[in-house]
Amino acid sequence: MERQRKKLAEYGQEHLLRFWEELTDEDRHELENDVDELDLQEATLYFEKALESSRRIGQGTLDDKVQPIDEKKIASAKTSTKEELAMYEELGLKEVAENRVAILLLSGGQGTRLGVTYPKGMYNVDLPSRKTLFQLQAERILRLQDIAEQRCGKRGEITWYILTSEATHDATVAYLSKHNNFGLKENNVRAFKQGMLPCFTFDGKIILDAKHRVSKAPDGNGGLYRALENQGILDDMTQRGIRSVHAHSVDNILVKVADPVFLGYCLVSETDCGVKVIEKSSPSEAVGVVCKVEDHYQVVEYSEISKETSELRHPDGQLVYNAANICNHYFTVDFLKDVAHLHEKDLDLHVARKKIPYVNDEGERIVPKSPNGIKIEKFVFDVFRFAKNFAVWQGTRGKEFSPLKNSDSAGQDCPSIARTDLLNLHKRWLLDAGAKNVGDDVEISPLLSYAGENLARIANNQSFVGPQILE
Image 1 (cartoon, helix red, strand yellow):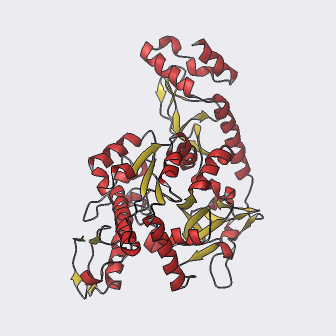
Image 2 (cartoon, rainbow, N blue to C red):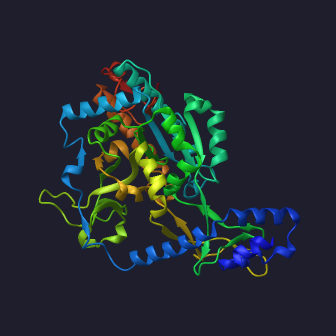
Image 3 (cartoon, helix red, strand yellow):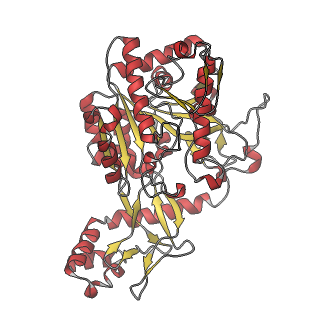
C-alpha cells in the first residue's frame, strides 16, 4: 500500500486512504484497484483546466467574437433543388450499399430524469406497438439497408456501434441480446464503454463514494473519442472499410439514422466533420447554437451570448443565430482517428456542479441537498475546430427532432410529446401518400417505411382508425 500512499501524497489526495485501518481485505483490494486506476497527473490537470474553462465562460458573453455560419457552409431541403436532394440521397444510399456506413449511438445516459433507472434506449413512450427507442432505431437501420439494396442493386450492411457507460453497459447488452438485436446481425452490433473520471470537491479533493470506493462519473459524450481508440472501435471500422459515420444521441425519437440525404450532402461537400442542426423555435429556446467564434466553428451555449445577440434577425426575419445543435453529427473515420491520436488531449473540459454523495470524516455516507462537488465532462461537439472542411445541414424539427429527456410532469421534451410527435409524423406520411383520413394512434413500423416512402399502395384513398400498427 505504501506505493499508492506515496502516489496519492504527491498529488494531495492521501485522504482517500483515511479509513484504511477499518477496511476488510476485500474492501482494501477494491480501494487499491480504484487508486491504481487513477491517472492522478491527468486528473489533477483536468480539474485545473476545467475550472479555468468555467471561469472563462463566467467572465462575460462571446458577443464580440461570434459570427453566423458562412452561407457556403450550410444547406437544407429548403435551399436545395429537387435534383440536388435526389443526388444527395443517391450518394448516401450508395455509401450504405458499399458497406461504408456506421452509426455511433451515444447511449451512456440512464433515464433518471424520466423517472427510471435503466438505459434511456430501453424506454417506450407507450406507442401502440410498445416499441422502445432501441427497437425503433434498429428497425430504421434494417429498412434503410433494404432501400439501399433496392436502389443500388447491392446489399450493404450498417454497423451499429453503441457507446455505453458503467451504468448502462450490462443492461444494454443483455436487452439487445434478449431481443436478438431486433433483427440486426450480431456481428454488426458492438457496445463499448466510455471512460470514467473521478469526482472532485470544489477545492480539488477527489471524493470517496464509500470508505473503500472512489466516486467516479462518466466522462461525458465527448469521452467517445478516447473510447473509440481504447476499445478497438477505430481498428474495427478500418477493417470493415467504413468511411462515413453518423453519430447521434439515443433520446431523439424522430432521428433519421444514417440519413442518406445528410450523408450524401457531406460526401458532396467533401467534409470530414459535419453537423445536422434545426431552426431554433424562438430566440429564448435554451439550446446551443452552431456558429463561428473567431476562426473556427463551435457550439455556443445559450448562456454564452446576450439576449440582444440571440434576438438579432436577418432582413427576411430569420434569426441570425438560428442553427440549434441537436447532437447529430457526420464524421469520416480518418477524422475520428485524427481526433483520437492528435487532438483528444486538447478537448475542452466542462464543469458540472452536482450533488455528489460522499463519506464524511465519521465514515457516514451523506447524500447532499445542494451541489457539493464537480463532475468533469467532455462534449462530443467540441471537435468542430479540428475539422479541415466543416459543413452544416439544416433538418426539419417536425420530421427529425423530438428529444426524450424529462418525465411528463415537465411538460416538454417528455414521453407524451415524443409519442405525439412521432404519430403526427406518421399521420402526415399517410395523408401525403394519398390516405383519405387518418385518426389518432396510427403507427407505421420502421420496417415498412423509413421516411414516408412505400406507403402509396396502403394509403390509396383509405381511412385509418387507431390504435393501429401498419407493418
